[in-house]
Amino acid sequence: MASKNELRRYRANLADELHSAAIYETLARVEKEADRKRTFAELASSERQHAQVWADKLRANHQRVRTGPSIKTGLMKALVRAFGPRFVLPSLAAAEFADRNKYAGNPDTAKMSADEHHHASVVQAMANDGKPAATKGAEIANAESWHRGVSSGNDLRAAVLGANDGLVSNFCLIMGVAGAGTQNKAILLTALAGIIAGACSMALGEWLSVTNARELAKTQIQKEADELEHTPEAEEHELRLIYRAKGLDSEEASRVASQIMRDKDKALDALTREELGLDPAELGGNPWSAAGVSFCLFAVGAVFPAMPFLWSSGQFAIVQCIGLSVLALAAIGVFTSLFNGRSAGFSAVRQIVIGLAAAAFTFGVGRLLGVSVS
Image 1 (tube, rainbow, N blue to C red):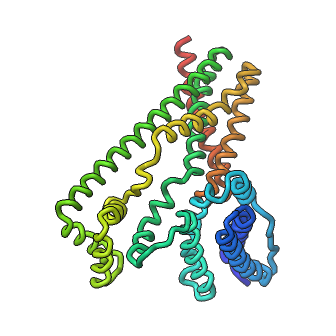
Image 2: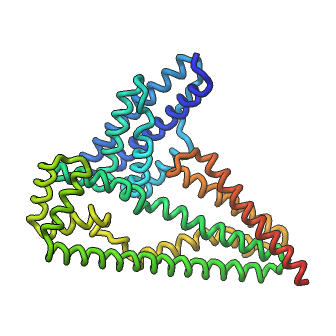
Image 3: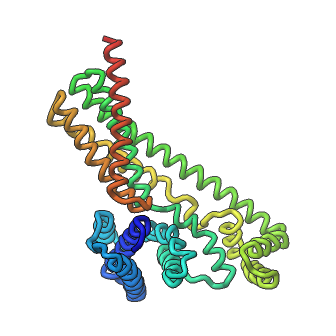
């Protein structure tokens, strides 16, 4: 009979494998390209086989096996259907990368461990539009950029966190003003001002951040281009050292570096990616679109706690504000569970507790200030 900890691990692994299988099956149904559709179907089949292993272990220990979809699974499937595979692939690639070693070191799961590493590589390649590497050196370079590709450019994470900023900040602002005993009209005006001011601030901050990042990247790339023009031997030596550090032997590193240096454009691209850690095609994204998205996401989150004051007033409006904000906080918590590795329930409860604690603090400060001023 397995121990309680082992049974808990079996259940967690079963849930993870069922979740992955369901997502890959949905991706296979939605995907239009035949090769990618077939790959998703193969991944789903592999995950189902893994799930069967853990289900068999639970049954062998006379445990009930639950195979129904979780809230997280249903939410991810809905996102796939609504926005398509490419919207969720970065989050999926991040999850596969984080879990690639979860079966390592156990002889009983050696094959599954190898499968997980393979899945992580495949999903990452598909998240990068499946662009093949031309050389072994390029493959290593692609592996090195894994962390940047997974951790950056994640639209889902940015959307959730942007909406969370708007929700929590305006919820706290409204509760602080309400705590001071302010009239309903003043609370509503404060909430609307908070939405506009916060959204504008977020948009401006995002625009400046992306613009500065792009300008810095362009400056660094230009310096690299100048060095490539005036000291090509030194740049080839740098490439050779980079590929040596990535695991190539001296001869192959020299061959790859020499081949890349034959084309100045390719050499600059390689040096930009390898030495500077930048993607020449992106350079931080478009500052105007980033600003617009930040404005909208903040406003969407901030509008929830303000809505009750449009049709209600007094204590009843405050209660509705708290209730609506709690629901929104729970929804954001569920969304964050898609990329933080936690369960949907845990993430929702944590989000609610933190949001309510912040709102309670500002309400208390508002009450103290309101009493002292009056």
